Image (tube, rainbow, N blue to C red; front, side, top):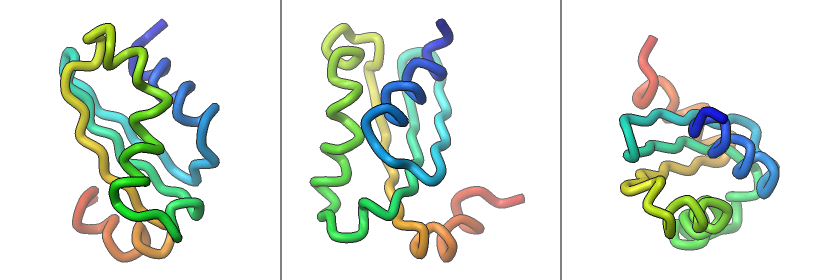
Length: 86
């Protein structure tokens, strides 16, 4: 199975995500996740919510580096144009 698909499957299985974007180069991954569940979470809790489902891949060094950006739908509506220009 493609590793990007595996990361997506793990995250969608663990979290109610409105949108999910995954970019990778080798074992370096960038994840952008959008969920209303992030509304009352601190930045640390959001990071933990993403890292948790991926811990086995991180422990196996399948994922060596992980950059995580999390947004509520409202934050994403404002920030999307800066992060993902057309």
